[in-house]
Image (cartoon, rainbow, N blue to C red; front, top):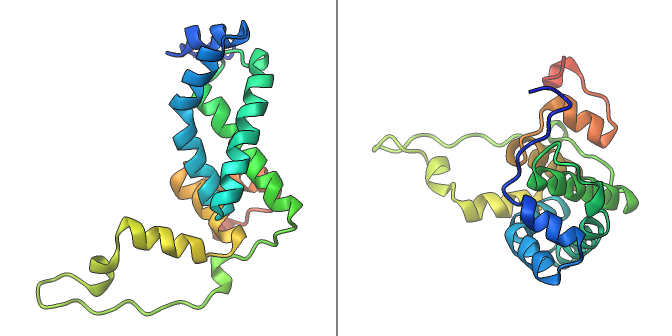
Amino acid sequence: MHLTESVVDINKALIEQCRHGSREAYHKLYKLYAKAMFNICLRMLNNRSEAEDMLQEVFTDVFQQIDSFHFKSTFGAWIKQIVVNKCINELKRKKTELEYLDDLEMVDMPEENDDGSSEYELALSVQNVKKAMEQLPDGSRTIFSLYLLEGYDHVEIAEILNITCQVSQGCL
């Protein structure tokens, strides 16, 4: 794909209706993307109330800036970038210092049970992972979310967070 080509977006008609002020189209786009964007906000901010507020700010910005969306990516990717940037700005505004997992104590892995499974494997569940994420320091949680859940690579995360990326951390 050439840089001058645009991406086909399945929501192009809705986006065009939003550009013409259709409240129904705004509502439909919100319903399509709100849950996924809220989850990103919640993972990054680790506070339901702040995530809800951030989601509203994001969609206010999205709808005010909808004319600047030029179909060079999908609409979902465009919104996601806005969400990630706004959450990072909020974390910076709160002057959150990044604490890396390297600074935390390592926990020994439990031994395997007779059936071949380990306590560790048995304990892993979506709920436990969410609880563990909530306990991470803000910086580590942000990096974890961007890398494992949002799919950014180390170099992209370093650029987004304006931090250095060392070879020992997986960067080139």
